[in-house]
Image (tube, rainbow over all chains, first blue to last red; front, side, top):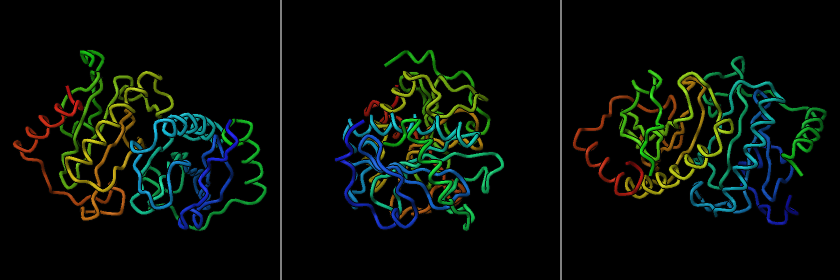
Length: 146
Length: 146
């Protein structure tokens, strides 16, 4: 893994408000949505500045490859760790211009199945400190976090 | 480009009902949502069987690489051809188990901006035969269709 020195120095205020910052992976930032109704991770590459409004194909090729590799490991981890039925993978960016890739574990019994999470997740569910600590340890063991 | 002989032989009935089949690109199928409110393309890889319910990371590596390459070309084309502000890229699959990748052009003045298209697109807008013919020609010129 890289030293992470090329991780984004600035995070869009909306991402910071919505997510826990879990740490870095290969220089990119790994976030977790504060709403714990589903395991909803967000990858923010170093290449995506706060207001750049880049789409996936506009990121540098090295950044895209790294994101794909990380998203693959993360998807495998999420599906197994949370016993999910599906992974929802998406780069939208209509609201928050800083590039971010959603990696979301979905279960047939989750709070808004089969609808997409955006705008449909009931509020209120949160991650406890113990849950976050356990998750960080498991993510590190799965090489999804430095 | 490949001869397309490894294109999926069977399309999920929901995809067939919702989309025009434009043709093949490098063996994968390129579909276009019948609702013309936004330019909403769908790539269906040969590797994804109708009921397989595979996630992106579970597709064969060669299929993933090919899908990424095609999605890049398609995103560039869609953004330029339809003068879009953003590309929404997503693999969800909560409803239709056959793997399919959404490549959707979004504009700040489109029918459901900034919400995601799923469940928010007003019905009724359709592509004319002339529009479809012109689009197919433009997609071929941009190497997004065989």
